[in-house]
Image 1: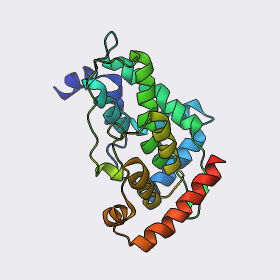
Image 2: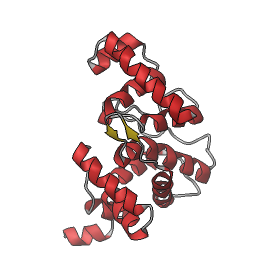
Image 3: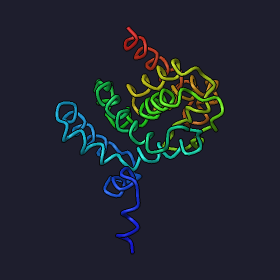
Length: 215
């Protein structure tokens, strides 16, 4: 019975069954995915293998578009765009070292991929005015904020998210809370469990990284 029902699933859901699932992002996991991403930039078979490992996460991102009015397109068109968005992210990623180690691919993927997928879906449906809003992310979902709920234009938000991918996890959260969520320093300190002095010290380093990356 299970095998029969499994045959009715779409290709991305089938891949999700063979993926890493809803894995916890640890430094060890990131190191492995980063190694695979470096190989996948030059080897299509390695690229596809990496996509398969991340298929559960990709499928979850795609599911948010079920509430959109996609006509005349369908959710399967979103799944096709999902693969192309993955290639966009992989080719655009730059593994830049930080003071606390390498900025790994998985951190970049989790922050930037939803934006790339949204951009592609918007182009497909031509930003229909009558679409329903996508499902919101929880503010506590992997310590990331919902880009659909942030009242920022997409270009500015994309820059913020890409810069966050160049930082370690703690600094990325500070950047997102202070800029994308527009929280004051004391509120960021309270949310992250650090002192105001530590916030300003970390913020100085974050600002230096942004200036360096922005050229």
